[in-house]
Length: 249
Image (cartoon, rainbow, N blue to C red; front, top):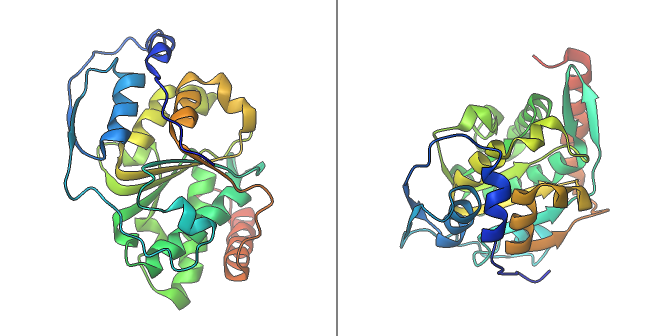
């Protein structure tokens, strides 16, 4: 679970061959390591980088468990191998295992008073609805913001940012939506302080140069076969049941 720092510039050309857009210089304020990754991989190192003095996440790490490890203040980029499986429903996809871990992290941020600084981004509408409903189930007891204010698809969150971004890739195979590197670029570049990628892709992620570069740079955590707290499992089951009955709408 060691954090690796390796050069990712050689992967830039593989990415840029897929893009005919206009190269822009943008100045972003936040943790330099996040924007260095974005700059090197997606913009050939041409982004102006600026470290913000307030770009930090102070979490007390009261429990010393996996959520505390993922949310540790000294880890700006985190890659979590979840080992889940995507499910199809209502014309979209969702991943119960990734959703469970995202909700657990949400609850921990809520407890630590940092949830207002965080957002959960997802690839698919199905995962968006599953997470929103699960968070709203827990909100009845735990309080906190509505799931509709916490969870978004990447496309809906363009142009906005948050201190903490938790991104659920959802699929366990390389799907068309994941082949568009711009979606991953948007997801990671929304984060000012910490970006956490929840992945069930395993070695399939290595076939996407931008994800491989992220994995090599990030602190890696293995969450395969992780048992979620009972309240999280219950909220996800209720949300999934409602999703199966009502579909994606």
